[in-house]
Length: 124
Image 1 (cartoon, rainbow, N blue to C red):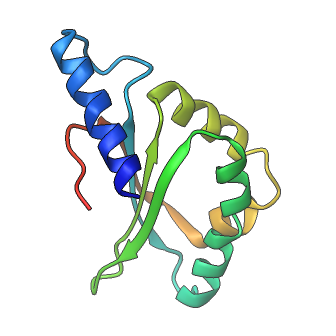
Image 2: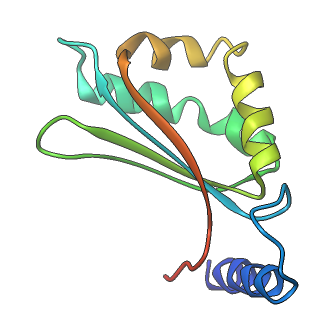
C-alpha cells in the first residue's frame, strides 16, 4: 500500500509541476454520501456493497474503496479511481450490473450526494 501511496503522490506532484489541472488521467476521489432506506439492515447493506467488489476490481481502475457510516446514519462510500474518466465509465456500467440492484434498492435516492475531487495528497 505504501508503494501505491507513493505512486499516487508522485503522480500528483508531476501533474502539479507540469501545470496540469484535474485532467482525465489524474487520480480522483469519488465521494458519495447517502442514507439507507428506513428499515434497512446495515449488515445486509454492507454485504450487498461488498458484492460490488468483484465488479469494481474488474474495471482495473479502482485503487481503493472505503465504506463508512456515522452515528447519524450518514454513509460515505469513498473510492479512489485512476482518473475521472475511469470513475464515470465505471458508474455508467455499474447501473447495468445485476449485483448493483440490491445496493441501489437499499439507498434512499433522495439523500445521495456525489462528487469527484482530484487527489492532492494521500498518506497511510
